[in-house]
Image (cartoon, rainbow, N blue to C red; front, side, top):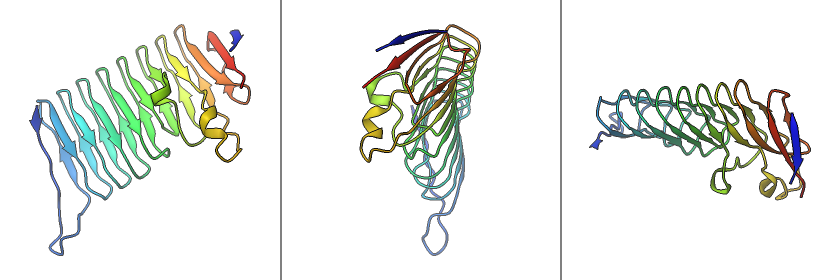
Length: 194
């Protein structure tokens, strides 16, 4: 380990006779779909095509399927699966589990993030650094870039948020802080001191 210091639009809302939204199971098509959930715990499957899936509120399960998909959910403890393709998975609520699957994936703001097969980016730029608390990142196979440098968010209340990173097979690059745990299988580790 080397360390350096430095479209088809498809939407479905299921309501009860009283008008309140119920949890839904929503399936896309083989086309490029735009799918939106309800405020409840939904299951949304994009299937084939380059899909945009937004779970909204609730503890959702979002599945991109084949294609280059964008998955996000604003509230709730969500599970997101990119599967095949070059996917972007964004967890807005911090308690999310993100699994990119095969392809060149970007994973942002999950409590636990799995890159899967292929060269993935986990928190690779300022706009998508992890926010809010500690996370665990698993790079998987491929040349991954993992950014565990989340100091902007630690200093808000002074509480440290140490992260855990393991890289898997491939030539991986990690930016981390001194309080983070980085596995020995990460080839290029840059420890950032503030």
